[in-house]
Length: 207
Ligand SMILES: [Zn+2]
Ligand SMILES: [Zn+2]
Image (cartoon, rainbow, N blue to C red; front, side, top):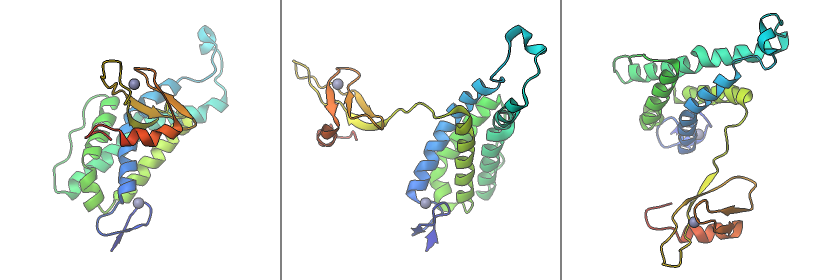
């Protein structure tokens, strides 16, 4: 019997439970967006435009800027690439080529790891370390940029039909705190009590 390296739950086999694998997949998916968002935090928050060169940047700005620099130039790309390279080594594969801008490197490494998650969860003994590193990196980046916009939880497709019987089909998302949601296409309103009904009415193959 194994245990999940991230949460300690008992596992039949492998190194990461399903929940932690999914959480890691979502974090890897968000990482390039987070990396982009960090760019907006590179300049000191307070400066005097043209006078900038003569104004001494206050000490208080420095820790934030250094954290952004660490995460952008090196940080995220190096951590993800380091893990990718380790996974490839454990699998007996050659080393990945590292090329392009840091943006591209973050995207490439995050995507590669994300596509390899099934193998990582099942067969990579350091999967828990990878999950922890990605979670901590995301936490550090979020502490600088604030939360990424909440896209909401996918509830399903809009089941409202127009006069001719054509079903709307727009994807409905629910953001935490909202008590009802409005279909973005047909503006039909669903109260939170309707969500369950909505689920049962989903067309086959959609969820
Ligand atoms: Zn777990
Ligand atoms: Zn609709």
